[in-house]
Length: 425
RNA sequence: CGGGGUGUGGCGCAGUUGGCUAGCGCGCCGCGUUUGGGACGCGGAGGUCGGAGGUUCAAGUCCUCUCACCCCGACCA
Image 1: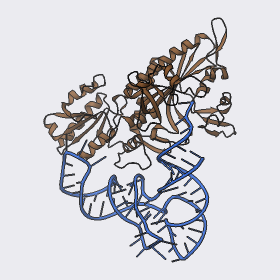
Image 2: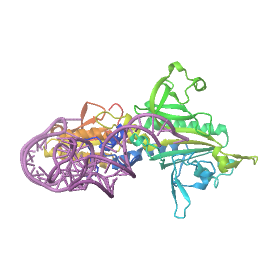
Image 3: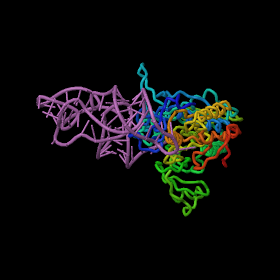
């Protein structure tokens, strides 16, 4: 993609209505634009990041046997009344509306009810289980106060997976599988080192813990007490002698950390299956409710957190796995050969399937470099009068201060070799 | 929902106790000079001041209502 064709532009000045680093940087760099409080538009660069995060999540969910679906966001009152969650006093984040006929509808903020109800049509025998079903869907929550850019919106993209098991042992296995998949996801998203598996309150239907994945973030909304070597933490809301003993945590080794939630997984037991009648019969023809688990991962929110915690004063810093493009290519200098060399590199790289954002503007070096840093692609490639003389271009990592000279051919090789550059580069 | 605050060209802001054709920076258009870390000169285009009502000879400035947004707090499957 050429920046001259990209309809978005970078901005030097901060957006006045954004206080969070993630919203400021993403807005300035042209990834998102705010439509209303807690509602954002994803522009070309932002859409690519969102899609890439979704893809990482999708791959890991599929690896553990997840089946992807897409449910409607429209929720019927009758269904949710069966679990008592239609009531605004029980769930205060509903966006509700009405059909022309007058019957009420809600916009989904989670989907236990519809999926459980749906599965009644397909699950009846022990042979139909276990199941892991997920979707990546836009959720709506009428938060009292939206804030922190993508970290707390009223409309957001979320992956929600639900597990259906025959018994506790099977449920535990599924739960553990998903937990491991989550750990892998956060590693791939570049925040593995910053993310803690955290015990928290079980929610309205459970006395046991639920578990959150919490990422270290200065402006996070949660506080955890973490054992850094065990990579295990406890949310301050449940921090206490009993909880610590149950988790096997030593209070002396815990460190207080501000964090932001990137995922939440918990046991639903048979709450929904019994209320909605999702049952199966075992080998002996005995009927029991299915045991369920729920696994959320906010895709857009995680994008915000990554932007927030992996950036520096000059701009965003995307991990390779989710960067909208791998390379920010440009040229500086007045020789016509310099631009030609850049054009040639662009052609070669894109033909080889490498994702390149080519800054083909006739702008000054400072402006181009500032934009490169702001947009935060993992690598910057520059053709200049000097490098052209040697038949090379310069390659620099976003996070590095040094650069090295490479030939175009070599560059293509580096970036097509497993689609990845080794860490040592 | 409680407290505080803000709405003025696309963006960021300034507009004294009401007073003349509403300014500035960024961005944008044109011409020229520049060109390795957000250049400079000259010339342009673009706003009726969130909305409604009111006071006044006169309202961006005052009053009433209203809408939107931001910050702090509470809340957060």
